[in-house]
Structure formats: C-alpha cells, structure tokens
Image 1: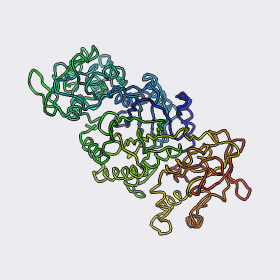
Image 2: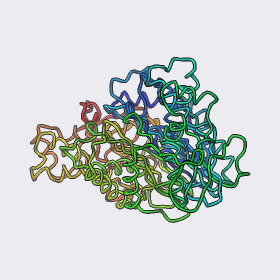
Image 3: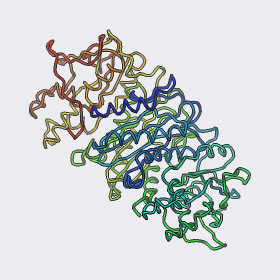
Image 4: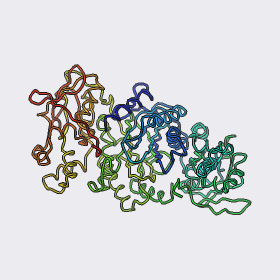
Amino acid sequence: MPGHEFQRIARLAARFGRPPAPDVGIGDDCAVLFPTGAVVATVDAAVEGVHFRRDLLSLEDASSRAVEAAASDVAAMGGDLEGVGCGLLLAWTFPVTLSDDDFDALARGAQRAAARLGARVIGGNLAAAPTLTLTTTVLGRAPAGQLTRGGARPGDVVAVSGVIGAAALGLHALLAGRGGDANFAPYVARWRSPRARVDIGRSIAATAHAAIDVSDGLAQDVGHLAEASGCAIRLFGETLPMLTDQRAQAAALGLDAVELALTGGEDYELVATGSRETFGPEWTVIGEVTEGAGVTVLEAGVARRLGAGWDHFRA
Amino acid sequence: MPGHEFQRIARLAARFGRPPAPDVGIGDDCAVLFPTGAVVATVDAAVEGVHFRRDLLSLEDASSRAVEAAASDVAAMGGDLEGVGCGLLLAWTFPVTLSDDDFDALARGAQRAAARLGARVIGGNLAAAPTLTLTTTVLGRAPAGQLTRGGARPGDVVAVSGVIGAAALGLHALLAGRGGDANFAPYVARWRSPRARVDIGRSIAATAHAAIDVSDGLAQDVGHLAEASGCAIRLFGETLPMLTDQRAQAAALGLDAVELALTGGEDYELVATGSRETFGPEWTVIGEVTEGAGVTVLEAGVARRLGAGWDHFRA
C-alpha cells in the first residue's frame, strides 16, 4: 500500500475512534471483537456507475447509503449493530486521483451512517482501482432465534414497513433531469438517503416468522422469501403502501406506480410474515402466504404480469 | 441484482455447502455465527490491474491468492479460521461479460484456499462493475491474549518466517517475460500461490510480543510494528532468509536481492518480536528491538538507505 494511504487510514482512525477495550479497532491486522451470542455477518458493494452516479448523488450520500444498504441485511435478520462484538469494515477502492476532499466526503458519509446506526467502524481496506467501489462488511448481533427468510408458513400474513417504490420514483426523477422539482423532493431524498430499518426489524424479531429487506424489488425479494420457505405468496396490488401523491407523481413521469413498487427496489424497507398481531402501525399487510410456490400479484382479483427485477443502471 | 447472479449464488452455495447448525451460511440476508471467545475480523481487496493481471495469473490463482492474502492478517494476530464462529465473505465485482468458465475459476480458487485454511465460505456479494475486484472478509478466532502490532519491547529479537523477497522476484521475472524460465519457477510459484501462515502464527501466539504479516514489504511492515510499539527496530541485511539461488536470480534480472527482500512485499510471511526462545526452526532472527523510533537496516555495520515500499503495479 502506498504511503499516502497510511495517512488516510490515520485520518479514518482519528475520525472513527477506538472501540472500548478489550476490543481492538482500526490500525492492526484485524479488528478483535468479543461478542455475546450470535454474530450476523454480511457484505455489500456499491459500485460507481452501477449503483450510483456522482451527478445524481454526492460522495457523502453515496458513502452513507453504502453503509445503510449493508446494514439493511442485519435489520432483515432482526439484528442490530450497537452491541458488544458489532462493527463495520469499510473496504474502499478508488482511482489514485481521488482528492482529499472527496476522500473526506466518503469518510463523513460513513460516519453519518455509523452514528445513526450506533455502529463502530472497526477496520477496513483502501486500495487503488479504476472504479470507485464502497464495500461494507457489517458484523451485527442477532437476538435469540434470529429471523431468516425460511420461516414463512401458510396462513401467515405478509407485511411491509414504510412505503414502497418511492426510492425508485426518486431515481427515475433524477434520471429524467427532474430531481430538482419540488414535487419529487421526498422521493429523491428516499433514494439518496435510505435508512436501514434496524429498529423495526428488532421489534418483530421475536414474533415474526420470516423477513427480508426490499433491496432488489418487492416482488423479487418476496420471491426469495417464498422460495426459502417452500411456500407461495400472494400480494394484493391495491394494498401497497405509498406516499399520498405517489401514483400521480409516477404518472407525471409516465410510470406505473404499482409496477415501480413491485420492481423498483432500493427502498430498504422490510417485508416479513407472521400472524396479523405481529405487525404494528409501521407495517402494512400486503398479502398472504399459501401452500405452493412462487409469487402472484392480484389487482381486483386479476393476476398482474410481473416485469423484470431491479437491474440497477443497466436496464 | 440481475436474475443471472442468483443462479451464480446458487452455484456458490452448492460448492461451499452449509455450515453446521445453528450457524446460517450462504443464502440469507446475513450469515449467522455463534463464536466462542474473540472474533478477529479483517477485509482485503484484490483489484485486477492493480494487484494482479490476467496475463500473469490465472483467475483461479487470483481468487485463491485474494483469500490467502486476507487470511494472512488473521495469521498475524495468532488466530485461525477453523473454529466455531469463523468464516469467509466473498464480495466480488466483475464486468457483466465475465463468462461462466471464468466465474467458476474464481469459485474454484476461493474453494481451494478455503479448504487449505479449513475455513467456510458463509456469504458474500456479487455485483456488476467495470473492474474485477475480489474483496474478502475473514472472520477468524483469536487465542486468549491475541497478538497485535503494539507489543514489541526493547531487548526483543525480530524474527521472520520462511523466506523473504522470493515472491517479488517471481513477479519481476513475470514482468520481464521470463516467468517461464525454469530457474524462476519457485519464485513465480511463490508470487502466484502465497499461503497465509496461520499455523506458524498460532505457534507463537502465546509467547511472541508482537507480529505483523509481510504484505507491503518487510521494511514498511516492520515500520508499522515499530510505530505501534513505540520502539526502534534494527534489521541486519545479511541475515534475511532467502532461497539458495535468490541473490543470483535477482542479479540475473538486474535486481538487488536485499533491496527486493526489504521492499518487495507479497511474501505473506510473518514478522514477530519476542525472546529468542520463542522462535523455532521455521523462523530466522533478522534484527532487534531497541529504544527509539523507526527502522534501520545495517549491512556490515553500515546503514542502508531504504527505497520506497510496495506500490503494486503503479511504481
């Protein structure tokens, strides 16, 4: 590693601080953690030109977003990032021409997300590369009996947190050059600054039967849940939770809001199954688990043909 | 994530198998681990064109090498990867044009390294990108009182495992178009197929005072050890362990073998400090820890001026 990068690591170490002893954080060969109970581990990459573009997203937001997207997988297991034995490893690759200002923007974004999540940055790796890539490893803590994708059973309801399709609508507004329009502002904000739903995941960890986060697109992610559980899932298109003017704003871009909600992705909400009383006011029941296989979306009793999932920028 | 990648994940899941319950491996949002004692966590990226080139290294070797290089950091903490709560997360980015044969070569390489290390692949991430990047997160297990860079003290000897500079000589032979010469074969093999020195690290974990792996170059890595420990380190150039004909083969390429051993990097050997009796026959004593700061290399009592460290391909 070139000497310049050691100075940058020192700046990261100063920014992110030391974990409480006996844990060992940034600066040695490995972080050392003393967890209690189950560790949940996941990794996610955000690649410039594939997952984000600098003309649509500041580097600070890109970096915060990369951490939140990775942490979303921990939320989907009903875990959190705040405990003993938790932490983030930031593996960043970037061209050698990346300025110190840009580097600091990346550091600020990761710090913002880490602070929001109550997580510590415990290590990472900096490497030269033609492409800016932000790869985040998250070590979280799972409750007793962690939540997987595989526990859905016939008779469960399917519920989703928050609203769906708003992030994808924001991205479409940006791609159409209308990201600055005031009416698209809440949608653009949702695409730029997603938040891993750790609290919401934790709140159902003990009672829900199965969960996954909505990253690739609701229909596709629900499909994973159905497959892992060996069940069929039926969604009701009319029930998908949206912002008040979401249908109108989608139409203004020539888009179908339900299609976008089903296939758009990057909402980083949670979709879970269980008994109806599991799901509080942050949740909307959108379907049911039945015997069989696959995902069907019904609207006024008629099955909708599903488009392809979320292919990032390369449609 | 495009649907094609789910098929590739399924192939990886079939290849790498399931960890024993209650652990959860590939296929859910996170891996779930139930460690005992301390977890050591590290991440390392291998970027095509920076850390390897396909004309010099097969994709299978590149992938194996990426895992071994990441695991080397665990070796340097005196840890291992075989226990409960250990595992590998493979985050790979590659162009959408990567063939299935190439993808399988990457999978075979990771499998080879994982098998050698006794490690399980428990998760990962596949993403499209302009650049092939192999980012490996390693979760290992540390012994009681793990080995850091910060424990060297005046009066310690400095010892290194194996031989030093052979990998860099192999790379220089490849870059000079002489990688096929029989006399360079052992050097090329060392560059192409490094092995994390996990067993050797474990053997000194309880008795050594400090350790680091030789990835960037011996002088630079020893410098990190000196700095973290608040000591000076003096190395004796004549004592650096090399293969029998290493000086002659370096000279045949117009290179100085000692310079290459000090700055070449990518040996993935361990350098450690402690009392002389800590170090068995796999080790060579190459220096001593004194009061002060910085690294000096003496040859016949005269200080050598050190060149720059290892800057990968961008010299």
